[in-house]
Length: 184
Image: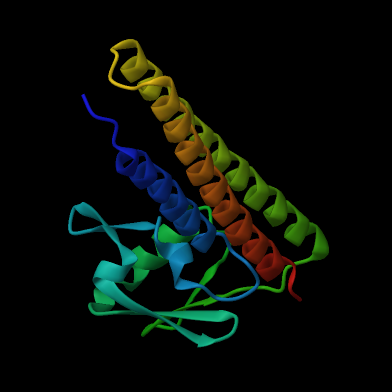
């Protein structure tokens, strides 16, 4: 059995990708089409993402415009948005749906920052779990006689460097999101 650090690096990268997509769905005071990623519309008997049945664009800094390809889906999209947890009421003018993002209050910003920090901590926990798995695999390979003591130390140092690198990425991504949320 061979130790493959790439496998653990891929898991850490998936954690970063997940964090980035979670942050994209967090509503700041700007219009962001990613907020609609989790919204599903009951369309011809199946749950469909909005991007599959309409174009979504940012018309102004705080306005998202949803332009369905089939105008009969307008009420379905409107209903799905109202039932979602994004906290924005859709405005249906018969041709398109507009989502007006209100200016966030200072309290609202602080609540969102708490959510950002919570997601950051969850990502760091995931990275620690990947580190734990990697170190366990190294220990098992040492028991099997595959690695000498020096090889074990080198591999453990490589894992430590990798964990530090990904934790730094998490901090950078989170700091940018916090600044975006607190921006007035």
